[in-house]
Image 1 (tube, rainbow, N blue to C red):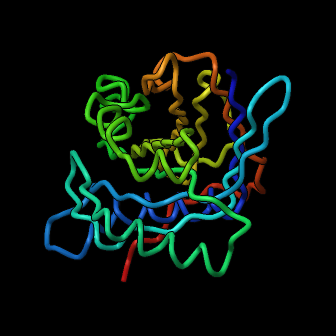
Image 2: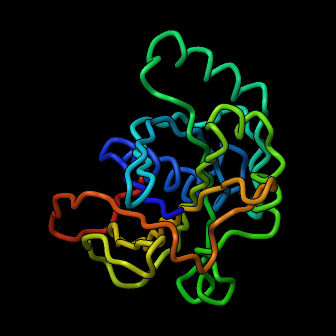
Length: 218
């Protein structure tokens, strides 16, 4: 099965703000910056003859997650808590999956570590997350937003690294967005992520302003 994943403007904005805040400011602990963060994704799924279309309409940051520069550990109770709110207030939207960020010191660091790819721990986590498989009707969506600081300050429209990876520049930061989807094949869970041609990711274009560095003074 092929999958087409689209991300709404509001979700892309929220993910970008969360990723940059965790990258630049951390979680308030002194000296703890360039941290990973995570959130949940809701939307809807439509089956078509050519592909299964997954549209991400809303996100919520998991504030109770434990954050580190190399990992983020979310509380599964928070997932159930927030999903219960969505079930009451937005029953037309289903829990699709989650996202987390990968922070890197530089673009070179990102390239060396293949930062836009799902790690073995990422894949293992989604394959073993029973609640997510149940709520997503066995089609869990996993997304990564990678961030690296770059020397050149500019804004750019989304460009494609591969079918399931896009990139763009915001001020002095390069951002990559990666999508992967789980499915059941021959009775077993598999994850279509790194190097797959079965997942196609797209986002809307957004307005560009003259490039200036973000003012980070208090």
